[in-house]
Image 1 (tube, rainbow, N blue to C red):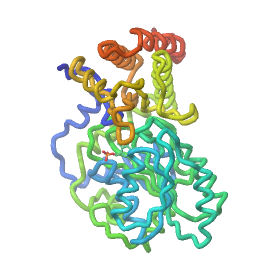
Image 2 (image 1 turned 30 degrees about the horizontal axis):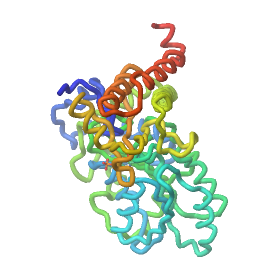
Image 3 (image 1 turned 180 degrees about the vertical axis):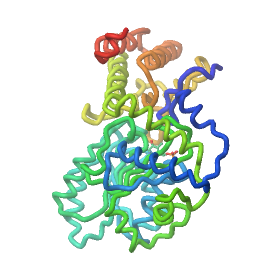
Image 4 (image 1 turned 90 degrees about the vertical axis):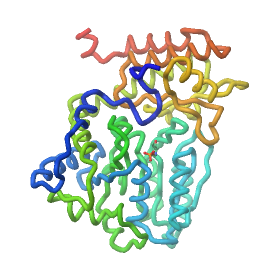
Length: 396
Ligand SMILES: *Cc1c(COP(=O)(O)O)cnc(C)c1O
């Protein structure tokens, strides 16, 4: 099997050579007096990606799940009520984490394929006259279903109910690939990770925290040690860390931020949107259906696609893996066997996406799907060919 084929899983994503090299660092002393010169610009640069000037960025050696735990354990107390909607595997797992932390989780169950229900949040918050709900938790981009939710809409619902709960958002599979406006949307904690839009190896939870969340921390009683915001914030400004930092990932993030800024965040978002549109053109060309219920919910980083009745999506992804040496996302939870996923985030280009679409078509033909070779690829080609940014077209 070739290790040169890209992966089309929605994280971890393909690592640009430039970032692989940036992470190939010999050990340096994180207690050396010059570590502060490395750390602070990285924390500052990451704030621009979150869209915050008021917030603080914290880097934990962890995966995104550690970021969820940090968000909850630093700001809430045992028995506190949190309001969460479940519409996929990732929102489900954050709910599970809250329950294991002894929180009273008020769950709004939604169809998988739908997004965060701002109207139902507003109703629940309006009914909570005593303000027992301490936080609203939202998965911005539900990676299991390819659904992006409107965070500004959730904020508007909270404001309409005049409710003081914290707003915590999981943006693990959207940050650095899609617009995120932490300050403008009134987000109190945003959780991300190194291995998706930032195109790095797994191993760092990247979390941004608002002043309001930091104030909540003063009275919050859930235990936290490894994930303590306070320990981090006490030491980071002078280059200190409460334990050994993931040095190679911090160097990687420094380079990743450089790459994102060189391309320009707006261009990064536009590229993701274009690539996603090309994938959706292909899905329509195949005559298949997305799990996401409506165009307003379509994710620009991952598409979950139902296979036709009588077919098994696990068989499809396994066949592609064994026969063509390429990984696509499997159906998770309720979607197991029913849908496969195409991750289209990170360092992808038109050419890479077309190769993935062509491979899916070959595998579908092998397995007797009622999908004609070329039906999706042609649709994507036509779209990519005619929608290239002006600059690229001139240079070509
Ligand atoms: C990947 C992902 C996570 C975090 O997963 P880890 O494996 O812990 O990094 C959380 N939420 C979403 C939406 C994700 O896509």
